[in-house]
Length: 307
Image 1 (cartoon, rainbow, N blue to C red):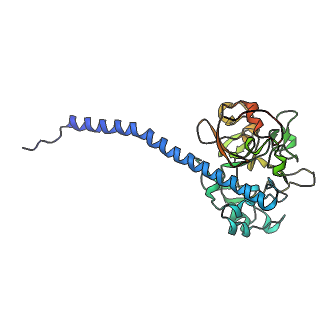
Image 2: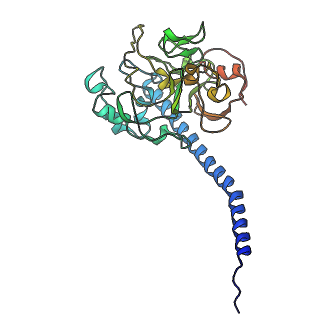
Image 3: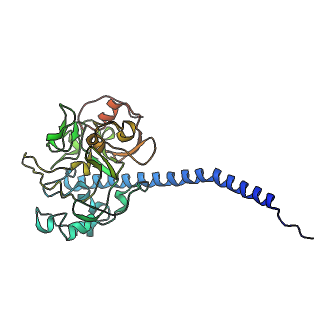
């Protein structure tokens, strides 16, 4: 006579299976996050190589942004297999050159480029923002230096610091910048070029959203390269080493402008950066603030050891 499972035995089996799934699930999630982190490192490695190739071709590093809101990430397109997209852009102050006008520039801002996106980032592929339909958020921003505490000079958070509206920052990417490798006197292995950001378009504090983008920005457009001021939201493409990394999570009371400017990531415990020599490093957010800021200046002559 064939004996079937009793209800008690079936419940025991189900309980054992559930327990095994509970034990395995964290391991699976950890493996997936490890794969995503590796992919993120690979993206930053590609960006670092693209910057080096750009410099080899032009004898200068890409500007952070220019007068019609073109960003450093757009200049790298030919070096990340984006020749066709680069050639479709209109580099002009108005008309088709506007990033918010229907045309190739707006289309480009809505084109998904995997190299500019960390797989761990929990943001939609497309969002409507600043009159750009289906705009694509990014995970990576350029190094704007160590002195910036606001996008606009009129809203500087810490007295004696600077805003991205000002020219001549001590980082790598800023308004109409033309930084040469020879100007990175702290050493390429001691200076960050690009790093991760915890992009979160739905988080708002003190009127500031953690929204970061690539290729172009309508709000940056009024910027001038003649020493004048204008434009805003430069933090869409550049970050500051003045606030500590992952500031939003370490100090929820901090001003939203500082949170917006801070580097961070969706990886626990720190963020990934590419240095001037092309090396990619994961840096813990517990790093000493003085050492951290030293990574953001190109010629501060700081003395430190990066473990």
